[in-house]
Length: 282
Length: 320
Image (cartoon, rainbow over all chains, first blue to last red; front, top):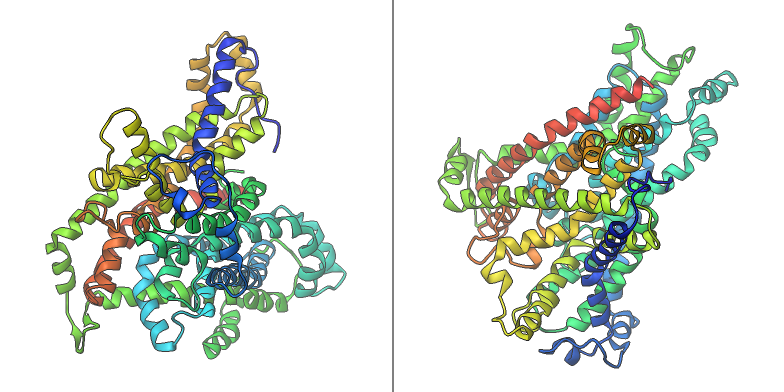
């Protein structure tokens, strides 16, 4: 992060101290629900649902053990989440890199239109395409398959990926391409040997952002999967009707599903802003 | 699909060959153009197949008589589905709920987001830690967020809020039953304020320092500083946040699915949830497709502004 402009530099003092305390209070308040979930994950099912919330208790790892036990249903869903999130990111990169490369370095009359068209598909609400996708998937046997879900995630993230990778490619000086051109390197050769290494940090942050988005996605997972290809999001959503039951188990499962993403998200804050605002705010 | 690709690849370049090219890279020969087309094709075709073709099919179904329970009874329905949709009071309730949800969530997330961004833009000890804690909710998957709030905080018996009310000698509130829409808005605000905070903070950090210095030397007070320097600078950023969030809020589903299931009654049934119920519980493909088209139209009202902004951004980039 760059050094921020400090609006209040000349006016610290008591007001400044109060504002600082307010900032701490807000931070704790925002984080509190997550802290409470973390705490519940270490409780037994009995202490998790008590009329007086237990702040001090003997922590137990039972819920975590149960979730991570070999061959547990939890592991099945976690594996599905991993396969669909990482798989859709990889397929997305394979589709994105050539497209963004072509648009960034060999633009023609229709490039602007193509790019804006691609971005605009992101604004089609998922429900707008839900019914045909469900029916087509059903007749093709793609319902409840990891492949079917993975392709939906790729489509969902492709506009963001193209836009981000395009913007990273545009930051690369054009002279480099022209030099490679004069040296007689082909388009593909230039892309793979010259441009990809230069854009690697940008590609990595793009991949990180869309992996997070795919991991957290729940709409499609709830709609087109049942058990075989369900992700953690769909599995956790299935707890929605358990009134006062399995809170510890739900919390432990949620902590495992959320913690890695929160950590990755913290690392990728800046790229997330850039990606989600389509480069409007960097 | 394969044959179509080949078709586009072989025929199209001939069509543009005669036109002068506005390419950035001079001196590249004809083969480049063909290669470029091939590089672009997979992504374009993928989006066509997975987004535009289904959208066209939804549009087609919305004029069809099509119920999965009566597969024999299909045919052109004219505008019947739309008539049924507009005669359905639940549709109007869902539309109203959608707009209420979007409106209040926008006000709250942008309001709080702006306040927090100003708060966290100061230098103070442990700022990084505090900021990190404050933005954490944004990275939590919506289904988890929904269930934490529904179970551990808002549950009328075992929830933390219920305990707090009892401790104060008050009657606990059954949040999701008594104030369903407010509860959903509260949850969404918790999840999305960090997004507004992150984006606005990034915007604040690109504030021109010299302008601030100048008005300070002129003796501007803190409010004037905010009103005349910070807010105009942030205007564009706030606009982007508003547009993006409205598109996300229009399509809220997981938050409602995991907490209120659209109820009680239709109190929190928004457009996506309404379409889901119609399609998966009434098996009415025709009418739910008409509903889906209504949702797309609504999203487009917001998206048009955003797309205009994005393409404006594009041209600004091209002039660099």
